[in-house]
Amino acid sequence: MFNRIQRQEPGENQESVWDYPRPPRVEAVPERIRIVFNGVTIADSTNALRVLETSHPPSYYIPPADILMQHLVLVPRYHTFCEFKGEASYWTLTVGERTVPNVAWSYAQPSKGYEAIRDHLAFYASRVDECYVGDERVQAQDGDFYGGWITSRIVGPFKGGPGTRGW
Image 1 (cartoon, rainbow, N blue to C red):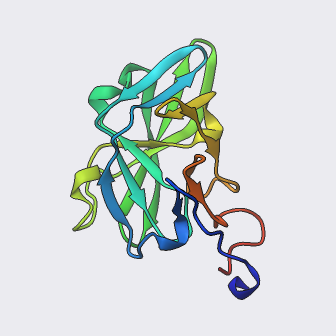
Image 2 (image 1 turned 90 degrees about the horizontal axis):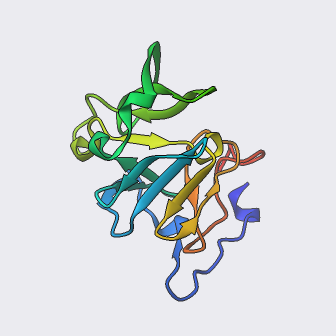
């Protein structure tokens, strides 16, 4: 199926997600990362990391020191498994009268090579009101499975939406 999908050529100051590695790479994010929900900036970080994996928009991992953790509760007994990063736990967010279950995920004991993201939280852009990389508001990745954040600095096509499972 991928042979019918055309890789977009990145322009100046852009990256193609098809140039990202597999297994994924973890790297520091030079830009400020912010997340807003129900009028409250729940995360604001200049210490975030991003995970880059072939065909996926980056997922941004924020250290808990840069998150208003009093608004988050660990979801008991719900986990998923990533072949690279290990077992993920999920978090529910409540601000005022609004609650969103499974809004973020984290790795308490990530696999070897991914220790840098230990206890950092990654948020689904589609489940909060606003997410920013620098001053740019991100677009949520279709399908939400991978939780990637799309900015004007990356090009696809992006895996995750309907019809992309077999890529």
